[in-house]
Structures are given as C-alpha cells and as structure tokens.
Length: 88
Figure (cartoon, rainbow, N blue to C red):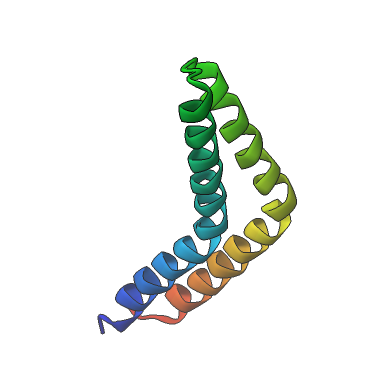
C-alpha cells in the first residue's frame, strides 16, 4: 500500500539528480576556474566571480532547458497516472 509514494519519491530524487547534475557541474567548474583566475591575478571583486558563474548557469539552462522540461513533464504525467490508479 505504501509502495507508490516511496517509489515516486525515489524517482523524483533520481530525476532531480540527473537534471540538476549538469547544471551544478557546470557551476562547479566555472566557480573553480574563476577562483583560480582570481587567485592568480589577485582580483577579489565579487562581480568578477559572480558574472561568469551566472553566465555559465544561464547558458546551460538555455541549452538544456527543453530536455529538463521534457523530463519533468514526463515525470509529472507518470506520477499523476500512478496516483490516480492507486486506492487511497
């Protein structure tokens, strides 16, 4: 009786990791590169660190946005169908 909610929760977490992985990975690499650049040049302006990370995040979201929305919409449809079939 409890298999549907825990299964949906597990699938949701897996979806979150697969969708968020490329975005967070890109932000991690951009932050590391900017940190090394700031340490090498001794420029500690917050805008120098923020703007490239924001640009990298927006670029990844722009290119992967359709894929991300497709994955979330398929999960939502599947979850609603499974919940409708389950007797609460």
